[in-house]
Image (cartoon, rainbow, N blue to C red; front, top):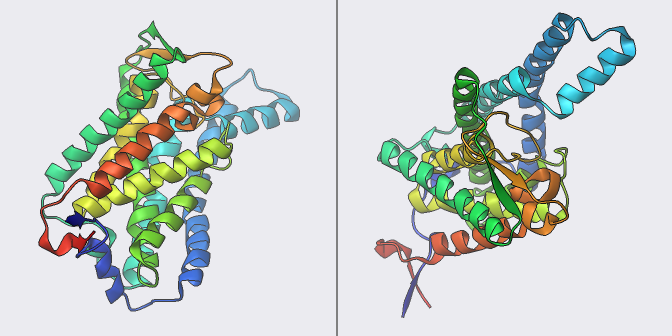
Length: 319
């Protein structure tokens, strides 16, 4: 009997082995933290500038205490223009990471998963996959009475359009950093499955400061990271997981009106509400990404991506 695996055979990550700069795997982790921290700096400057302008223009905010309170609230719970600025400005850290890979590690864009062959089709597959996965998560919680439909809430078309663009950029940015850069760099010195696990754990920890983060969220976001990673490996492309990640966030926030990793995304096509005292199935403040529903969906999807046979003779191993 033959069992196929996505971890054998050729992958875009193999291109990272041609990098001129290849430190030990543990140093890659330290460098990831440093590069990620530096990459966030210009984004933070943009966000703080937008918050400053909003506070200055709001005549109802007066006095040091009020200004401090408003600044802290907008930073921890970004909404409206601040959230849009936060999403759009993720272009900056993504660009810095790409520059790092090209000119410090000195490797190709292909090695980050920017493979041109079939990129449009794979991006579309990612969009459908992301939509289907979150909808399945929502329906599972709905079946347990943890979610209820309350109507529509789309009253600002321009804001909705900007949020769509913002999520497309933000989802791609996290995939470029975690899968295109970190996972592929780690795979130089570690087995690919280990690179997937480590990069997925760090992906989860990137959300540590989000409202409602807890142990279940840590597990679920690690599973979500693994899912995006094996999706990229399965299709040998970063485009597929960029699309899946982007639409995953867009759908939960601005299609179903639910919290996105603890943040309120504003107006949505539909509006669902999470039931009280059912945190196991709602995820509490963090949203459905912190629910048991997501755990179940992610485990099923990961298993399907890894074990559903793939037509590739090089990917066969003896069971």
